[in-house]
Length: 142
Image (tube, rainbow, N blue to C red):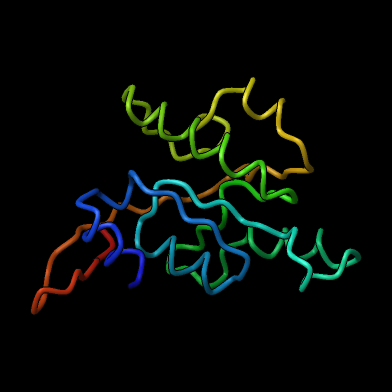
């Protein structure tokens, strides 16, 4: 997985990482790799305005992940990614490990975002064991 290779390259655990994805397969890859937070994004121009809500719902469902974990939150405005990432990072640094986006970032962060957001009411965060095969990271769900 590209996510596991990136985490390994940076010397961090997958659960301390954030993935930003606009596709179901990308959300699935991030979920299977055990990324700590998955932000879905529907603000790109290739997603028609009338399709943004249904696309967001698809990202939240997690149909491409092994444990049906979807995006933890979906944003419409890319400027909202950085406050979410900062909030997640701050909470992880203080020991908060909840897999629900509302618990990953403080309510004041969520209430000050600029665009529309949908927070997943029931994400499933798998536990992932990271091992290596021929120098490449390999994950297995626990």
